[in-house]
Image (cartoon, rainbow, N blue to C red; front, side, top):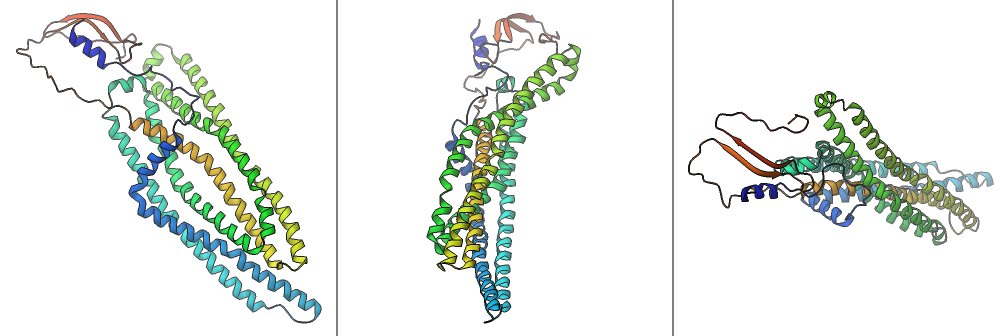
Length: 413
C-alpha cells in the first residue's frame, strides 16, 4: 500500500459504528449542559432582567390579594354579628373599597405577567433561530464520515425536536420558575405575619413533598434521556426508508423495514410511557399532600379564631395562602421534570455543535508535473470506520477517456 493510500485510509477512520445511538445513558453532564445553555442566553441578559422584574412584580401583586380580601371577610363577619346582636350593620362601603383595591392589584398582576410573557416569547424564538442557524452552518463543516455513521433523520431530530424542546422550556418554564420562587418566598412571609403556629403546620408537608419529588425525578430523568434518543432513532429510520424507497422495494426490504420500525417504535413507546407516567403522577401526589395540609390548617385556624388570637378573615386568607404556597411548589416539581428533558435535548444539540470539523490539509499540496488523464489504484483500502471497511485491496487502472463507475453491493451509489 502506498503512502497516499495509507493517508486515505487514515483520514477515513471514524469514531464509532454506524447505526443506533446507544441508549440507557443518563444526562452525562447536567450542570455543564445548563451552564452552556445559560451562556447562550447571556446576550439577552437585559431582556431577561426585565422579565425577572416583571415576573416578580406580577407575583407580588397577586400575593397581596388574599391579605386584603381577608380584611373584607373580617368586616363582613363583624357586620353580620352586629346585625344579629342588633348593635349595627354591615359596612358595604368599606367592603366595596376593598374590592376595588383588590381588582386594581389583580389587574396590575395580569399586566406584568402579560408583558414578561411577551418578552420571553421573543427571547425563546431568537434562541431557537440561533441554534438552528448554528446547526445548519455546522452541517457544512462536518466530515463525510459523520454522515456515514449518523442517520440523516437523527440530525433532523436534533434540529427540530430537541431545539423545539429548548424553545418551549424557555418560553414557559423559565418565567414560571421565577414566578413560583417569588410566590413561595412572598407567601411564606405573609403566612408568618398571620400565625406562626399555623405556618409550622403548613410547612410540615414540605419534607414529604421534597422526598416524593426527589424519588420521582431520580427515576424519570433516565427515561426522558432515552425518549429523546429513541425519537431520533425512529426519525432516522423513517427518513432513510422514504429517501431510499425505490431501492428498498426493489430488493424486497419491506418486511425487514417494518420489523425494524416496530422494534424502534416499541422502544420509544416503552420509555415515553414510563417518562410521561412518572411526570403525570407528580401533580396528583402533591395535591393529595396539600389537601392534608388544608385539613390541619383549618382545624388550627378555627381554634385560634375561637380564642380571638387571629381574625376570621385571617383564617380565610391563610387558607388561600396555603393554596398559593403549595401550588408553586407543585409547579417547581413539575418544572424539574421538564428541566431534565431540556438538559437531555440541550446535551444532544451541544454534542452536535461540538463534533470535530473537517479541516482541509494544505500543508503539502500535490503539484503534478504533467497530467496524462490516467488513474491507477493499487491495493487501496478505504472506510470511515476501521471495523467496517468499504473498499478492500482495490486495484484498477483507468485509461484516459474511459468511463468507470464504482458502486456498492446494492448498485445504488
